[in-house]
Length: 357
Ligand code: SF4
Ligand code: SF4
Image (cartoon, rainbow, N blue to C red):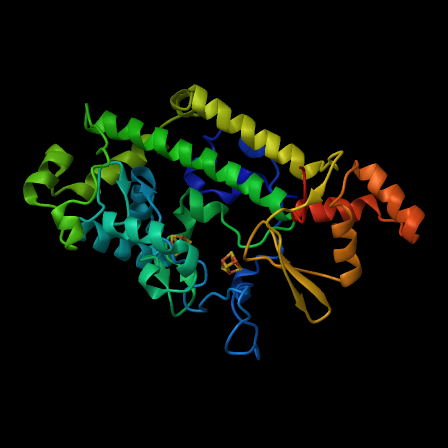
């Protein structure tokens, strides 16, 4: 852990985010994005085993379209560095298409969100239908990376601390996502007083038929900024950039923000000082199958199956009876001469092979 969380987030936030973002982020060495850890290794059989999920090399995990808050859309549009040219072009094309284009967000079209919700379990990382419009397939790169939002800043397919790492990053995602909601709504209302986010009323006819919203609906949503959408996004960016730290943090002053911040601190404490629970049992829904070299188990994530030796799998099964961890360890030592180190059990717990009853 060497880099503070704030250094992993868009540069606009750097001087503004609260102290909790000085928390040191864990290094996720298993998410080797340049040579994607989820793609089939060279020479792997064409058909993966049923419990192994490979991603397409021309999508990797970018089969998701983010919901960009208005001020980050403005940051992209205002960023004239040459490496942002393609990202600017794609954002402009999305704004011109109007689907999912609101004063608060540059969001996926509503139908796409319905499809994603229904398909991600089976198709994440595996279908061009879900490919992000900001993903450059040829280079395998994100065209808006410098100004990416909460999900894209915090997703990893595998975690060095397994489920504890996943829990930590989910809490970071929840906090940054909440910052995005509060700040984007705040600046929207400063520019369009009285703006109300659209309530979820299901798909409109236009959304169902992949058409842009009607002129009347677009006008009602954008008011004086209909036809000047880029201008509103740029103003949102300038307003956030013009805030000082106290002004930014005043926007975040609510109970839900405080709850999420506390959750981040709690998950970070578990990550940095893992403790062995007094009682552990094998995960009730542990999926296990024989494999070369032992038993392949799938636990907290289908993206990270774990190969246990048969001897270690037997140790896991020994926790299936009664008794505290200390008692099971004593029993294994007395009956089988096995001295099971605490670190090993901690690792099995981090992978949620062994869980609290
Ligand atoms: S985080 Fe995404 S790009 Fe990186 S290794 Fe995992 S699946 Fe591949
Ligand atoms: S915004 Fe970038 S990182 Fe996020 S899904 Fe799209 S291409 Fe991937």
